[in-house]
Image (cartoon, rainbow over all chains, first blue to last red):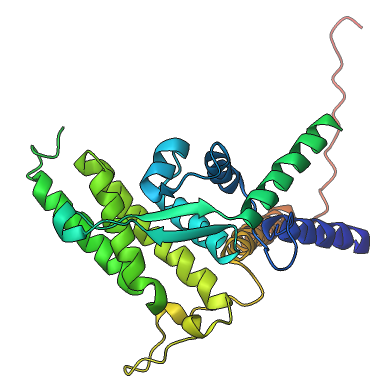
Length: 124
Length: 154
């Protein structure tokens, strides 16, 4: 019985660790990686200098807005992205300004490391 | 079955979508509220159909829940809990502390499964115990008299 409890506790701890998977980063740029986060990063890595709005990321990745915007904010707060308003006049354009996201040098380096680590894992 | 047949016009759906986005942005942390509303309204304009706009608005509501949860765990001045005048907790006050929302959901599901399993085990053991109890008392049977039948001709 104690062995069963021990294995159950180990499994629970493993599940907890997997759920709080905040690896692949150092403490300053700690980002919880998920498949959706990787898809967002992949969309930006196609052209690292491009600025994308949330709607464009949605068109490229197909990620629902409920998942997409928290990912964008998470990556921005971690320093992987910077964002700025679109340089238009909303009154003359007749629509609100879009928020444009762009990879930072840190984000580019870290995203490249993440995808490189996946390649190493696949090849190993 | 189209939305027009259901009595919903496209302008009404757009109005509902904008209201949902406005409501979702109000629930977000104060430092992000106006930014998120403008950003989401701009992305709303990029959607072509009314249903996709409604989907975006509903997704923004869910995004607010996630953002509020994450920002409530970050000890930033903009994310500190706001004490309302009404005296009850706002969504910004929710702090799951040690567990993330996903971990909390996992443990909640595990707990519910465990409770159901324990309930089933308890119920079944009681039922089986009751069924195993003999309801008939032991009693000694009277000996049956043995009659010897003699066949004719033997």
